[in-house]
Length: 207
Length: 307
Ligand SMILES: Cc1cc2nc3c(=O)[nH]c(=O)nc-3n(C[C@H](O)[C@H](O)[C@H](O)COP(=O)(O)OP(=O)(O)OC[C@H]3O[C@@H](n4cnc5c(N)ncnc54)[C@H](O)[C@@H]3O)c2cc1C
Ligand code: FES
Ligand code: FES
Image (tube, rainbow over all chains, first blue to last red; front, side, top):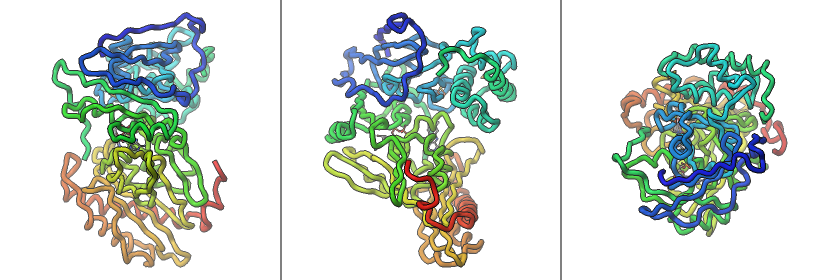
């Protein structure tokens, strides 16, 4: 994953605004990269997707690399954490087309044309997303390593269902290990996030 | 058995790059895999995990299929449901019609890993990976589902345990699930030694159809996490007896007697054999209870219409 150029047409025609996420991945482009890159040469293939509301194009050496590596190494977005790299810990969770998924299992090449959101893209009326505010208010973090995963998973939950019941909340927190807090305060934060989401004026571009 | 390990590469090594192809149609996909030199890509979870292995197979082009028309939805036919191979396990687990017809299937799909991972894993990828501890294939075996398999030169039907016979130039297009007979119940039991989500110690699926007189007209058990799994347990001779505790015990004993679990971190083979008997008993008991509560008319007349 070296030798990568990044190009972010952030303030072009769309004026840098977030627009509604591209619906589904149905409209994947036809056959993608044609020729097999040979070991030893630096053939990089372009990968285009929507990242935190902006269209990005990044040239990756290996489209089969995990999205996590592309985010952290190629795009320098280190808010998404790498814990286990095998799907267990949830620290690397990002939102792809509305679904919270572990980015260590998400093959980068498969996000072509899709909508990706990372913790860097969160914002809210007061600066922070209501979910982030809830974690601050309820002390839902200590070292903070697991927090981006929790926050993104809860963001995806609230986008899909603004009034989840307790079971749904627990289901969503499951699969994201925290070695510090013991989960009580994480669940408190999650419930607080639901409460704040109800009262918060929705940010303009939400869905 | 399955162990997950990121198996770090030797220092300084990086895996050779792979070509990823995204065909727009099924025919195009079939042409791309026709030579057998390309691998089918579902949700990519298995591929991404194996990327870190030291001795992984030489990289070949990957052909992404999960988005292809015909692989993406759950459709209802006259006497069956067809689940596209690209349907994510999260969608399988949440499908109401599937849950009404075969709770064993939605329970098995919903028991895989975590909700976040179920958003990525495809049904076809879960089956084609041919891991004896995977959950959905155990449930699909018990209900008698079949795999609709395609290649550039033709199509054929395989049972779920026959998935081992998939050729490199073939892909699973959809999974065909028969609609249950009236008064049919089903249940899935996944035994987790640590009580949290992980791969099963043992996993058992049960299906029971009751006759009007309370006898079991049909019963089926499938067991995973055993050699050659999922295994459809041979229950010959048991149908026709009253669906009571004695029948359940006899079927469960047969499941334990005719399967070969292996010892691993989740338990010794002997322990797992006892667990197979116990969890087969639980799955069958639930299936009988559900069958007794199920509508006594074919579900094709009772539920939902086309979707
Ligand atoms: C942390 C973790 C926990 C897990 N826990 C469980 C669990 O409890 N239970 C369980 O069942 N599984 C579990 N899994 C495993 C997961 O279900 C498998 O890795 C699954 O095979 C991934 O599916 P995929 O669609 O992403 O497959 P891919 O990686 O895309 O493909 C897997 C294999 O199937 C082939 N393939 C894919 N689609 C098709 C098709 N349509 N036709 C023919 N071949 C195809 C591919 O070529 C490849 O060989 C877990 C995985 C992780 C990471
Ligand atoms: S780093 Fe992805 S789940 Fe642990
Ligand atoms: S706050 Fe440290 S791991 Fe969760």
